[in-house]
Image (cartoon, rainbow, N blue to C red; front, side):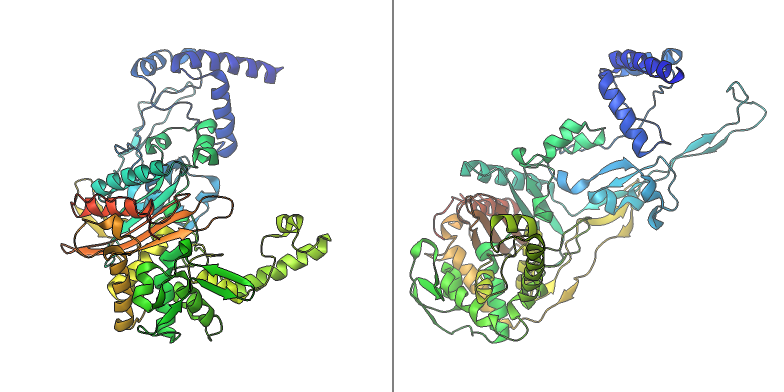
Length: 557
């Protein structure tokens, strides 16, 4: 009876409260239940951002709303809304599990801490210290005047100065929107722009994005589901940091480094391209069936001769040490970049060990379940690795296809190493920690993670091919960068995706006005690299160098 009476009183309270703060009784109930289930010891936030009139009404009539406590709180404000939204993270009340962690040993129950993004990474600098007043009361809840109150003033958290250039971030978002809208079918993509010498990130984003202010207040389940919905493009998913894709021909400079450094070819060695490359009964051809005749490394990079790189992939398959995989990992693929954001995936550089191990697991699963080899049921139940490694896998990897999983950020690190002579930079968003008055208290700059030795002649021929690809007649992105001015080193990429339109990539390095920059863009279902990703990268670079280049989509690949 007591339980029923309590439930009835709660419903009445929810109805009265809901009319004041404009929240339905059902929503209030759901938030109360959910909060108590997560943190039963903490207050329940029913609504944040209550209008001043409603706040004053509740404050004056607290006896009519037992258990309801209007309080003032401070909220994060994100004035640029969608710009950089994937980077910031949000605040959330510390969980019972987090209270057990060493890094939160001095944090009290109920404290709001950083959750995700930069908020989580730099929480110990940003959080500050809550203030409190401890007062002794009598049995009726009245303060006892004879015992002095104990008070601790709140301490403001520090500020975080970022490397982001807000003008470039805005321009990059607009460039991606324009490129994606121009495809007529694409809805998603990601971009990174960073300093290839220091690793400082100037712009980084994912499209579609969301208003970061949504997470400054309690978020409804419906809104959260909408932001995660694939039908809406999964706006919460950070494609620049977390999406592992095949990279298409933007991988070819990595193949070139591996082949040259391992001795599989030399800068001047010629290869005759007939337009086709056959391995066993399987034949592959260049994009649009093109034939280029005799080509060496620089020319093959300029016009993106697939057969040239297929041949290198085949030649390196039997070389001791797997140079193609080894150099891809040395240049930053298949491993975390170390950026100051949590939950970065390592990606995947496929090799014989990985594929054969997963194939054996597939076989054991298939036999255990009595499923036929290669059937859809077996693939669905036991995973998609239904055959061992073959030379064809190395051929596919050489042009950035197959099982490769790399992020735009990883590709930006790889291109930075080619640009700076072999330093593997550590991408960095946080530049320094400042106190409330803007005085620096901690420098966050970190040195390059490591260095790889690349022969200067080899590096020069690769860069020459990338320069020609963006500037000489017949280059894969020359039409896009026509009128840009100065040297642009760029590579298009087109990824074949089964059952859907090709994915578009572009990676570029430019060093003009003593302001070096690497830009990587990718657009799902964007078609050829020169059709959508390259124009987006061009517009980002035009903003950085204050140019008025047309950045017209091209059709050569």
